[in-house]
Image (cartoon, rainbow, N blue to C red; front, side):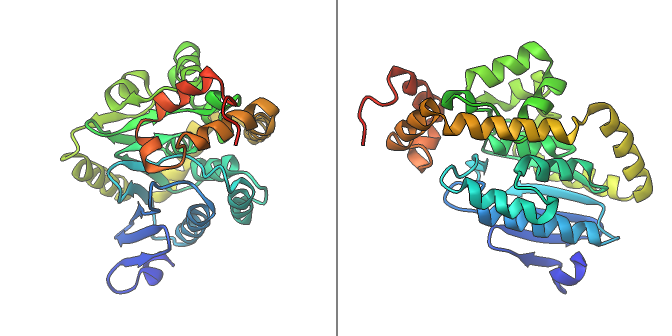
Length: 290
């Protein structure tokens, strides 16, 4: 059970998640330095957390936050795709983080993302899979960056964004591979609300405890009904995952990824100004082959 795992202090830790249990609310703080890349360890720890929380009848709400004010989840670790997919298969039976995230959407648990910093690529897809998203107005940035590498979002971004934003805005954010601040993300429907950073934790905590105080069976019933209307079928997630892998491994995708890595992709300096780096790839991704 989550409470037993947390011990008397109500706290526990994996390599990348600090977990605190407060009544029926489980708080999980992401801590995967240097920039919270979604790699095998973080996926493994998410699998462990979801499995444990679902097995604990007293757990009702999951709240995800980040220990790093600059990054919530930056994106996947593109050097470890096979490894993080294998970790996802431990819970969903298939090597797909899209299906892992969809499992969170389907879960009886109510999930809330409390976002500060950058949330790009699969980081965006993770928070989209959560039931609700609240972001710090001063620091949160959202991006689906896959088009810069000649591929598509492979973990649910196409499905969620099109349903939430509508066709035009979904195409805008996915085709542009640009950063969107919290105010614009709120206006577009990417998140529930943008709030001042100082108010965000208190707001989310109060909401989580309020929801956890209502009957758990009603949570599950309501989520089932809403998911029947809004959650894409598993096959759509599988197809997007396949297309993501095909695009990334294509000659153009591979060339652009190599160029991005040379220019600082997946380094703290490069990620702080990622839209500029991605835009520069169009100047000639293989002009300085290594």
